Length: 101
Image 1: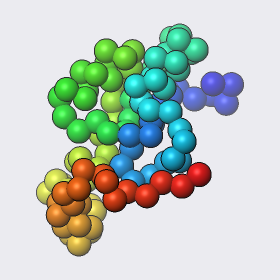
Image 2: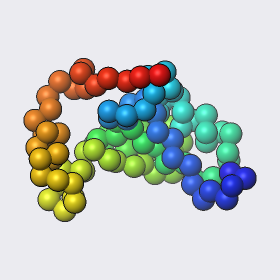
Image 3: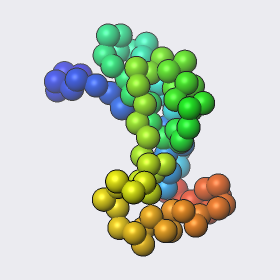
């Protein structure tokens, strides 16, 4: 916060297809950051795909959430159609996602 950040994004290991294998989940990261930086807005990110995830992020102490991959395939998205198709065809629930340290 000394660098002048206005908000902290708490991206947990739940994030789709990126991030380190041995990092904290958004479930533990959000409350930790919220207690460490009172008064600083915290945004939960990683694995949030629907209303229940939004509510969970807020219940953990986040001031808001960031939804990434879930909305990347919408018509308004500038993502390439081929990339959107790959995301839409994915059906293994992340089982084949590789994470590295």
